[in-house]
Length: 261
Image 1 (cartoon, rainbow, N blue to C red):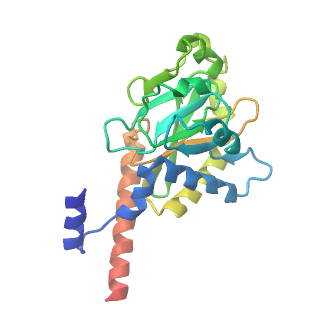
Image 2: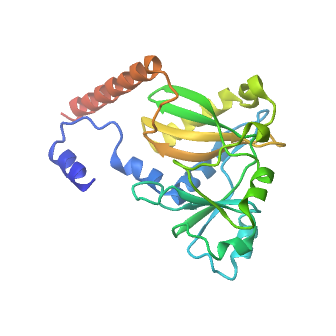
Image 3: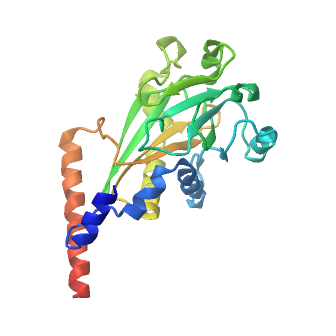
């Protein structure tokens, strides 16, 4: 990374689509939570509630006042435990689902960590992708509701790697909504959130994950990341959108250079 930064500094004529300083916050899950909390600035009257998950940071799993911190953060079990470092290290995706406070005693998730509410969401997650002015999304199978996970945990925290061993719901654990999955989501609302986040982050290419909470219908953005895979977006749509974004970034850079010259 330092070599790339040095190269860019030595070649100021290069077009930079997304400055490093705008990317850095997405490498830290605590900073991501602080960004998502600002979703409350969006006016959503008459629409489902759009929000960040409740969360808090911990530096130790053996803090005698951990239960107090959970109450202050409006958190209740079960909780997802994530390393604060979001990417770039081998164990950044090693996580756990904790059902009771005693399960923190032998937890192996790297510290510092972010404790995040587990949102029952009917085993469906909506993957949103932003490329320039275009917003795409896809529906993907996800973890089952907590009541299905607790019996399989054996009284211990359920550990997993979110990229490799995510416990995806079985057919028996999924609500029988089928073709109605898309009806759960207010796509227009989330596209508003995408535009809001784009302006807030100052980024051209990023992604985020949305779950719809069972019972409340809350639209909860549970993750935010830079340069996602876009594997659910057809090349026929993603590639033109990417080149449009590159062209816009180049024209903006050239326009700024001409104005300064």
